[in-house]
Amino acid sequence: MTEKCGVVGVSLDGRDAARPLYYALYALQHRGQESAGIVTHDGFQQHSHVEMGLVGDAFGEDDLDALNGSAGIGHVRYPTAGSVDSSCAQPFSVSFKSGSLGLSHNGNLVNADEIRDELAAAGHAFTSDGDTEVIAHDLARNLLEEDLVRAVKRTMGRIHGSYSLTITHDDTVLGVRDPQGNRPLCIGELEDGYILASESAAIDTLDGDLVRDVRPGELVVLQEDGDGFDSYQLVEQENTAHCFFEHVYFARPDSVIDDTLVYEARRNLGRKLWSESGVETDVVMPVPDSGRAFASGYADAASETTPDGEPRAADDNGVEFAEGLMKNRYVGRTFIMPTQDERERAVRLKLNPIKSTIEGKTVTVIDDSIVRGTTSTQLVQLLKDCGAEEVHVRIGAPAIVAPCYMGIDMATREELIASDKSTAEIRDEIDADSLAYLSTDAVADVLEKDRLDLCLGCVTGEYPYDIEGEETDRDVSRPDVGGTQLPADD
Image (tube, rainbow, N blue to C red; front, side):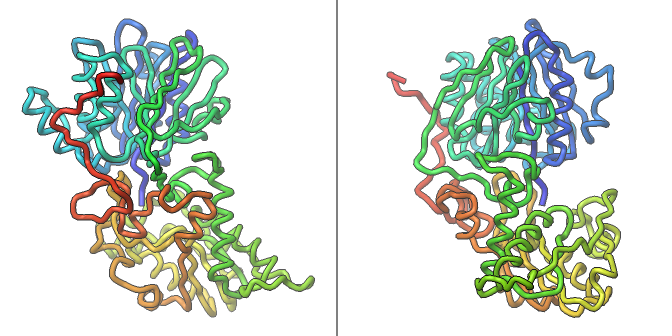
C-alpha cells in the first residue's frame, strides 16, 4: 500500500519560504513519489513550480530562487483520485476576482463528482479530474461572497470525505482538517515563523518544535510574518475517524501523530501481537523496514513472558530478535509491478536472506500487513529455501478485507486475499506453519482510542463516511450539495 500525499505550509518573518518548504517535502517524501510542488506568495503575486517525480528531481536551484515570498505551501503526491500526470499534480493554483489560491490536499473526497457537476453547470471550467481542484473552485466561489473563515466553513459543509489541507489565499497560509480527523496535520513553531505539516518529522527537519495537532474540524490561520496563528473550530463531531494505518505503516516512525510517537505505537502493537498470538521459535525477524518496530516490541514481550502469559524463568531469554532479511533499497514496491511474474521476481530482488540466522532454525517473521499475498508467499518460500525448519507469520495489524476510499492506494476486494479467505486458508496459501493477525481491539487499546474514533473500514468493511454501496459504522450522511447556507447567526 502507498500513502496518498503529504502537505506542508509555512509563514515566516521576512525569509523566503521556498527552501524550508523544499526541505519539509523531503521529510515527507515517503507519503508520495509521483509529483512534488511548491506555491509561494510575495505579497504581490503568486509563484508556482510543480513537476512530476521526486522532490530532488522536481526542483533545481533556479526553481527555488524563482519562488519568492515568505508564505507558501508544498505537496508530494501519490495519485489516488485523478490521473497520473501533471494536470493533477499539486499544489493546485487558481486566480480569481478576490485574489489567488493555492491548495494542497491529503485525502480523498467521497462526493467530489457531485460538487464538480454543480460547479461545472454554474460555469466553472476544470482542467483535471482530481478532487483537489473541486475544493479549490468551491472555496474560490465562496470567497466571492464571504470572508475567509466563513468561506472555509461553507466549503467544509459541502465536501464529504477525508482531507487535510494547506492553503494559500494570497500571502495568508491556512490549514484545515476534516471534521473526523482522518488524515494527520500538525502545527510547529520555527525560529522565525510557523509551519503546518502532515507529520512532525517535517517540523524536526527545520529544527522546529511541535506545538500540537490540528484538531478535527479546525481551521488554523498562520499570521503574516510568522507572528503566530489563529484557531477557528468550525465543525465539531462526537467521534473522530483517525486512520489507524498511519501508525501501522504510513507515517515515519519518528513522527508524532495525534499525540502518539509512531515508533512506540508500533513497538506496543508488537507487544500486543505476542500476548495475543505469540509462538516459541528460535528467532523473530522483521520484514524490513516496516516490520522492524513490531518485531522489536514482540521480542521484548517474549523475553518477559511465555506465550501463555507466564513470567519467564531467569535463565530463559525468550525468542531472539534477529535481522534475517536484508533490503535492497533500490527496488520499488513489489505489489505495484504489473504482472504476477514481475512481482514474484521483485521479492527476490528486494530481500536477501542471511543464511546463518535462518538455516536449521524455527522462525517467526513479522510484517505490517498482507495485501494480495504474493509477497508473503514468496517470503515464506525464500526462508524455507534458506533452510528454515518452520516459518510462522505474524502481522502487526488486522486483516485487510476491504478497500480504502479515503486516499490510500489499496487493492480492490477481488485482489485482497483476506476479503474472501479465512486466516487458515491464507496460511495454507502462503505455505506458513502458522499465521496470526493483530485484533482490532488491540489496535484501539494501544492507540488509546475508542474503536468509533478510528477509521477501521479496510479491516471491518464498515466506514466512517457515507460511501455508496458500503456499510457505515456510525450515523453519517453526505451533505446536500445543492447549496449549503450558513445559519443567519453564524
